[in-house]
Every structure is written in C-alpha cells, then in structure tokens.
Image (cartoon, rainbow, N blue to C red; front, side):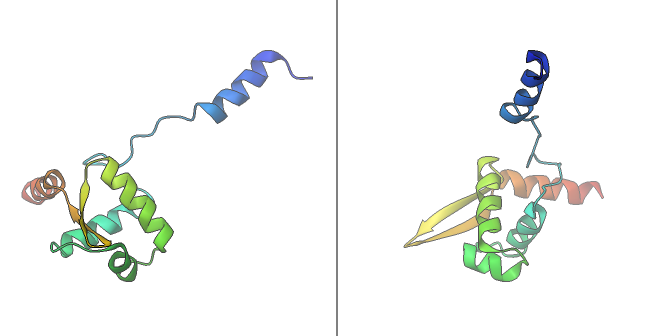
Length: 104
C-alpha cells in the first residue's frame, strides 16, 4: 500500500493541473488558435464557424473550442445575426497585430 504523501502527490497532479498561460497577446496559441486568428485577420468582415471550418483544416469541434478559448481571452468577439454567430478579431488583437507589424 502506498503511503499518504505519495498518494497526495499523485492526486494533486490530477485535481490541480499546472497553470499554463494560453492565448495571451504575444504568446503562441496552441491547437490551431494561430490559424483561426490568421483566418479572421484576412477576413475582417467576420466569419461563421462553418466558414472558419471550411478555410482551415480543423474540424467543427476543434474550431468551437478554439473560438471559446479565444473569446475568453478577449482576443475575438462575436455578433449574433439571426441564428448565426459571426466572429471578429477584437480591437485589442488588431492593435497588437499592428504593433508587431510596426516592430518588424
């Protein structure tokens, strides 16, 4: 039988996963986030999830997760138009992209 400390260490890794800074400006976004940002940057009129899926090699579930994470990080926003959600880059994201362009 394992001692209590060993068991607590194993359980703490499960219940308290390490904190990772995802989707902050200036950081690379895993899981296709950069691809979605690039697609939205090229289409400033906004895109639905279906259009983003068609333009990327990602499936709909992956795109939904990426959009939710980017929205939570305030890098994108959406407008409800009828039954569709149309996604846009946030002003903050656009300004950080411009800033990076000017630095190069």
